[in-house]
Amino acid sequence: MNKGVAITGMGIISSIGNTVEENFQSLIDKTPKISRIKNIETIHKNHIKVGEIKATNDELVRILDLPKSNNYSRTALLGEIAAKEAVKNAKITDINIYKTGLISATSVGGMDKTEQYYYTQFEESKNRKYIESHPAGDATTKIANSLGITKFVTTISTACSSSANAIMLGSRMIKAGKLDRVIVGGSDCLSKFTINGFKTLMILSETNCKPFDQNRTGLNLGEAAAFLVLESDKIIEKEKKKVLAYISGYANTNDAFHQTASSDNGEGATLAMNQAIKIANLIPQNINYINAHGTATENNDNSESKAILRVFDKKIPHLSSTKAYTGHTLAAAAAVEAVYSILSLQKGIVFPNLNFETPIAESNIIPVTTVLHTKLNHVLSNSFGFGGNCSTLIFSKA
Image (cartoon, rainbow, N blue to C red):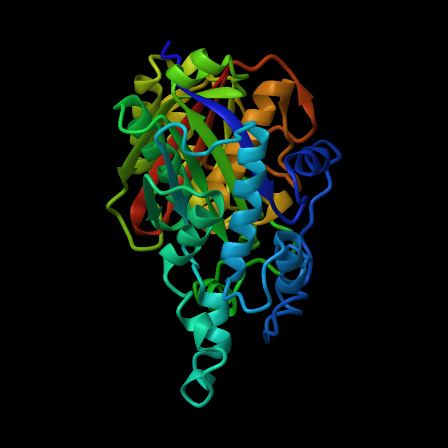
């Protein structure tokens, strides 16, 4: 087995909690937070359900103690809250005493402000500052400035696999000796742009989503941010730091099938899982739990199920999707589920796949539906994005 890269801190804010502890409690209490839209004025607010963080932007600004003159998007606000929690959790007091980088992922960026102020900014200049916060890298820059990181700062945007690829890149940079410490993760907020886009694709559910259920009707969008602190063996040994878990395997492949759909046989997902397992120096039977991408769409769940069968045959590990708790948080999803995977390893718990009733006829995969206490050494987490971008991470017990 490959010991991997050490994880020493994590932070998260999602619809089911503002901290790691709050998220964990909601997971074991089987308390999802999927509801009608409150913070966005949209014609769809009474027709779809989402995983919305109920705090307003003004409330998030107060949490971060920002000046009223700020031009933060909601993506940046959520991201900074989660990143600061991760750094605090890692007990870092001097961020730049070692070579430290930030790799942050997003797909929405500052769209929530752009769609609000784009047309009026030509006549009035006071809100033009929000248009300047539109680029995906703006939230990353704000988080880096807040944390004081200057050595290496970059943004990844590969749709719903974005933060998995941020975690993978950070791990590779530490292994290559390019950085000693990397804060990795992602942030995405809800916006009319994403709601309308997914509505056009006809994959949004008007009820609570049902991952891996034969009668699934689509996904619930969500918003969240989550970050991990990765540190080199040098730091762990020198500071005798507590390790939460290790990233032992990772892989990124491409389905090369369709702009928004996965292949029928899950080719990209199969390749990603097999390669991640190989990099971790494991075999499929070593995986104890799969935190599935599990979006509850017709295409994804069918494709992912077939890929899992191809990799694990009839010896499928415990499996569940946690998206019925939070909704699909797009670029933040893999980082959110990384936090959940680490909690699973630490607590010896498989979190339930909510709302499941009937297995998919083609695969007959049955996920875990209750809080399951069991010994876990290796958790595999899948994240698949538009454009065929398929990523798999393997987390191993410290």
